[in-house]
Amino acid sequence: MFYTAPELLALLVVAAGVFVQSRIGIGYGLLAAPILYQINPAYVPGPILIIGFSLAVVMVLQGLDALRWRRIFPAIVARVPGAWCGALLVQAMSQALLGLFLGATLLLATLLSWRAIKLRTSGRNLALGGFFSGLVGTATGIGGPPMALVYQAHNPAVARAELAGFFLIGTLISLGMLFGAGQLVEQHLLLSLKLLPGMALGSYLGYRSERFWQINTLKPWILAISLLAALLPITKGILALNGTI
Image (tube, rainbow, N blue to C red):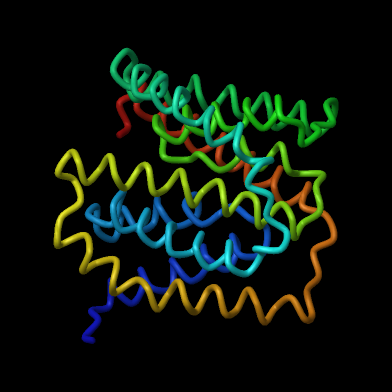
């Protein structure tokens, strides 16, 4: 299979994002989507979601013993109305104001979680995480942090497996909606096929690194990525309001 220089760069970007997500449970979309969009806008959202679905399948299979579908069920159910509300927000607000609003909300949740609030992985919190994951994910494409915040104090292996299960169903729903809207065509499938080696490389490196890099707590990693996820739409919103972009 022939690769151009931009396609090789996209491959490395996917590998890096997959590596991060395979270790801590989130990070692939947040790290990869902005760069892939600059390389070729056609990578987003179709191909990046297809790779995300493939990664979720791999992670679910790897962590099947730790995955409890019953526990994440409230989050999966709550994602549906969250996505619906996110779609309404997209229609009602400009992208600049939407980025500021959602970014500020996520920033506040991250800072409170860092210093003041200890979240438990309860059914209520999972439902709230699923709802806001659908809301933020539909409106901005960054849906991982709200759910990950609920799992920040959880056992890393269990958190990775159950987040993967949540993303598996959520991504499949998103892909179905894109296909139904005619936004998933042969071009996107071919681009995804070329990105698959990057997914395989990132997963392999993540698996091999477990031997010498043990992650005993997810909290600092999840909070750092959630902080980045909050600052990106805020920055973009401010630039848009100022007419810079």
